[in-house]
Every structure is written in structure tokens, then in C-alpha cells.
Image (cartoon, rainbow, N blue to C red; front, side, top):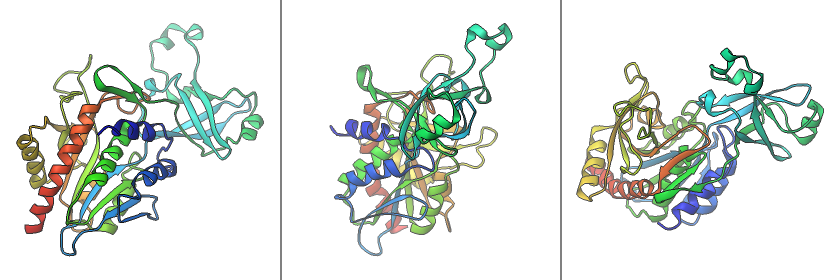
Length: 357
């Protein structure tokens, strides 16, 4: 899988937050169009690919969301400073002083997120987290009119300004591994997979703001089984208790058991028992390291896919990622490669299982 790192670089360095997925959709299309029988964009903006199989065989849906967390221009003040809204889940503390790109009709405009510096803060202010409402984006202009002449307007999308960087021991850091790593895994599968069953590879929109694209795509395709690719929040670093997030970088693919709210796992996915068994047995039979995860505090596209129409048996494979939903997400390339291996081997067993019921 020599090219998976280059695929990750190309995907993560593309700016495509929720509601503005066209740039990364174009990149994926250019990579995949010669490997699939059909490729098209639906009304929601999802990229749908199909590897045709034999009629009567179960339809398999493979899913990864294209969007990254982002922001929107909310207001431009008289001096040209920009207030912004979030599209996706942020922690304010990770946002301050980050460099950003504003995606305007005239092209990308760089900026930096600013706020009052510590030199001008009272002691009690220094002890508090700076909230988004106290931040702004500085693009270097002196007035609203100058910002507008550059092309900035209300509703423009904003993303981190960050490049993929290789760290020690096969670790990579970048923005948007959530969920461009899932997209990279799905790309590799579609490039290599051979099966008699129809396989839909679906790259969805607006997962970060409500699982929107997956809901409509699953309804249209009406699959017999589904496998979703996303990230899992790793907790193998200081200040996280082991029981809070017992997932580690380099520990192998994460097989999702359940996810949902912190109170009772409501509103999430409980992986279909047959698919969970297939994933675990496939990993063990092929000596692939794996991790099991019950995640309290988030969901994936699997939630809405599983509930589509009369129900879809759905499973989840995730890549462990440190510092999720920040400008510097970190993962292990080994975990990515093992996730591809586990998925490819498991898909054949899923086809066989749901062919016989």
C-alpha cells in the first residue's frame, strides 16, 4: 500500500468542510473513476460509486464521510475582522490562534484566529478558556470594504490551514483525518476488491452536522448490509484515564461495538451481531491486531444507515486518532493499512453471510 500515504496527503490537504465537499469529491472521483463501473453525484452531493455484481446477490454499502469540521463567516465588522460560526464539533481552546483558510468566490484567503492577548487580560480572564464569541479572524485588512473586495462574504466556508506531516515511527499528523482516512480506506478497497456482489462505495456529505448525506444515500440504495469507515478517539496520552478511552495508536483497527450518548448510548449504533462476529473472527483468523470500542459521546453514519427503510445490518471499522476535531489529528499508518486488510477480508464473509440469510 505504498500509495496510501500520498492519497491521505492529497485528501487531507484539500479544503472541504461540511456543505462544501465538492473539492474533495473531485479528488476522489479523479482517483476512482477507472476502478468502478458507475460513478455519480446524487442530489445531496454524495459521491456514489458502484462495482456491479450479479443480480440477486446482496447489495453491500461501504461508507465514509467526505466532510471535515469547519466554520462559516458570520459577520464582518467595520475594521474587517470576521466573526464565525462552527460547522461540526469544536472545543474552543483548540481554535484560538490557529491559521485558517477562507474559501471565497475569488479563491482561498488566509487568516488567523485572534483574541485579546494575555498582556491585556486581568488575572481572572487568564484563568478562563477564551470562548468562540470572544474570537475573530484577522485577514490583514483595515475595513469591511477591503475584506469584501477580496471576496469575503457572509456564509463563506473556513477550514484549518495545515499540511500533512510525517512524525516518528510511521505516525502522521494533519487536519481532516476525520474522515479523510475513512475515504482513503474506501478508495483502496474499491481499487482492489473483487466480488460477485454489487458494492456501492458511498462518500457522504455533512456527517459532521447531522449524518445528512448517509441518510438519503442509504434510503436510495436500499442495501442488504453496510460497513462504515471512520475514526475512533484514542486516549493513549497524558491526562486521559484508560477506562475513558481505552483505544491506542498502533493497536490496530477499531471494531465498533456501540456508540451514542454518554447517558445511555441513545441515538447511536449498536453493531449488528453477525457483522461484529465476522469482523472479530476475520481479524483473529488472519492475525490482524484489533481493538473493541464502546464510544460514549458521538455517532457515525452507521446510525442512520442501520435505520434506513426496514433496517440495514451495519458494522463499523475505525482508525484510532489522537487529538480528534483539531488542526493536528494524529494517527499511525499501520492502523490504516490493517483497517484496509480487515475490511477487504471481511466483505467477502459479509456477502456470504447475507446471501444465505
